[in-house]
Amino acid sequence: MKMLLRLIALLSAVLLVSSAPPTCYSRVLSLSKEITESFRDLQTSKAVDPCVEALPRLYLDIHNYCVLAKLRDFVAYPRCEKVLQVSALKEKARSLYTIMISYCRRDLVFLTNDCNALENPVLFPAAPSIIQS
Image (cartoon, rainbow, N blue to C red):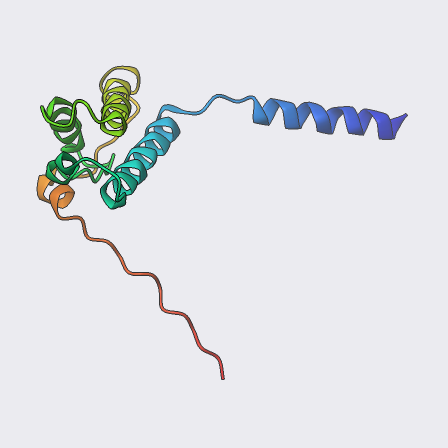
């Protein structure tokens, strides 16, 4: 009987944890990563319209206040309207912008206001592997 109660308690805890809604921060973070990866895939795709090469750079750092202007500029970019992948990417960017300025406005903390960092991101190289002899 004790074993059955423990099993029920364990299953209840698992269901409770897995049903917890994502926080605003986690939603914004995951959506920004998804957009950045989609943009990178679009840029490296061979079967894409030439207008994609002219799109503004899209590196998103949600801790940088300039990301809001970056998202606005990307969504308002007038070219590539007929390319489906770009339209889908703009829709995701519009959703992220809306989430950031309305739903999560009070939950987000911007650590910097460096717009240049979004234009020329510093990508850290992978850690060197340690070779043991």
